Length: 105
Image: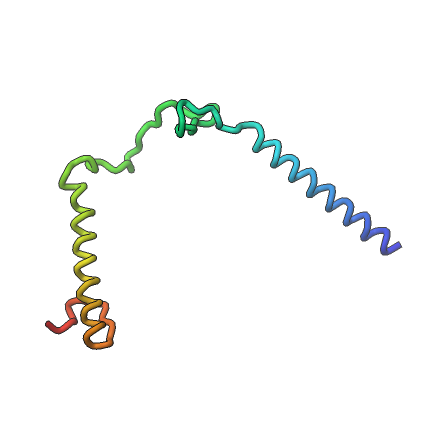
């Protein structure tokens, strides 16, 4: 009797898993998104997605200005200079110093 109950539970669990996986696969087949406008441009929004998204107050503004774009390049250049100083001091002394201001000249 005990074996019969555990077998029923196993069959019920297996059936439930099959139903869930079938439902998930049918949901994925409902929309394939493979209507390419041209070669390599195969992205298209799902049905019901708005044509143009409205901005919010959290959208980044001013990134198209040249001095704003240059900020990232300047910070990367400064980071590379600091890393070069750290590495040179490490090769010379064998100690890694994170704070560049603490590296003796």
